[in-house]
Length: 86
Image (cartoon, rainbow, N blue to C red; front, side, top):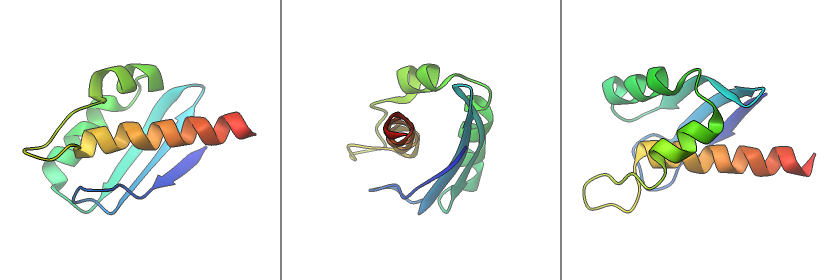
């Protein structure tokens, strides 16, 4: 299933991704630093949602309390909550 998430406190204004059988697929960040965000998307593609949550949760950017990669974990948590309600 494809999900859309509006991140908070970072440059991208939208993250879209697909989860299939617990595996993260096709992550796209809209806005922000294309090079870094393309790299993050490539690195997490094919990992389980749990692996991504473990590796990226709590990542900070400079003096911020969040980062683009941490916002991806927030998006994944929201997707898991949405799936649990179904």
